Image 1 (cartoon, one colour):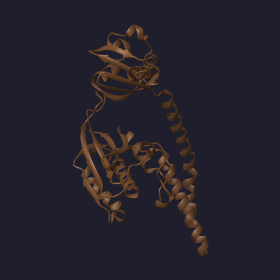
Image 2 (cartoon, one colour):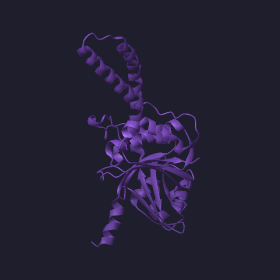
Image 3 (spheres, helix red, strand yellow):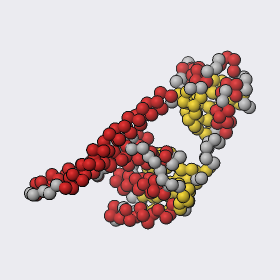
Image 4 (cartoon, helix red, strand yellow):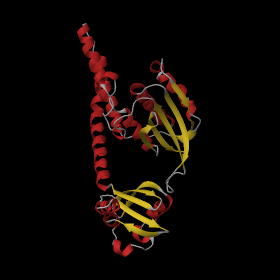
Amino acid sequence: MRDEEARAQAWEEALEGLVLHENRQVVYLNPKAAELLGVNREKVMGRPLLLALRDHRLEALALHGGERLLEVRDRLLWARALPGRLYLLDETEGQRRLQALEEATQTLAHELRTPLSGMGPLLEALTPKTPQEREVLALLKAEVARLARLVEALSPIRPGPKRPVALAELWPRLEGLLQERLKGRVVEVSLPHALTTDPESLLQILLNLLDNALKYGQDPIRLLSREEAGGDPLGPFRWVYVEVRDAGPTLSEYEALFLPGRRGKVEVGGQGLGLYLVRRLARALGGEAYAGREGEANVFGVRLPLD
């Protein structure tokens, strides 16, 4: 079988939907796309694109480019559009599982919060009489504090009031919080942008991103911001990207590091929740967190709406 025939056959059998279009007309759609869109592909071949998509949001995405999660005829579809091509992936079951996991997580955090809040004062009221008792009490306090941080991390994210924030104004606070950690390190800062957001949530995001780089990355570390037009015609027109870049080696995986417990290590005092919280906070602010390799740098950052 020739390469071209093999590729065509692969798309016929693919689990991802593909729609090819030209001049607003359907050129091709594979069986999976027909299934996801609920159409008979023989009847829409060569017909107007909207007739196949049956959704003005999908049509706008296909014509203008970008990517978006949309609810289309009781399905959650992740749609990605490139010139002349629209890719469709059914995320319905995955999103349902994530929602169920989030609900279970919030229930667990709620159930643990009350007993933990009472344990702290009880431990403070204890008076150790021997060095061994003092050591045990200190360990118990540390464990309760750790569990309290874990519960807080699992609790629903509720950003505070938004206001115009110049990113540069956050650096002195970050420098003060990380003063000991920054000694002897090479950190370059370039934060010329401003946006309207919750400054405390943004501070926590930057604190976690810098902490991640200081623990696991290599110098020089760069904290920077940039502004770009959004690729999604239905979303915010412009985004501010805030990134921490480090010169460490290429990692075997990036996306999985945003899952709880995937990067924290006992020997560096981590619980693996830093990047997990970054993503939750970024999404609560209307943005997204990301990571990857660019040139010689590992990049961990967030994309936030400018307005």
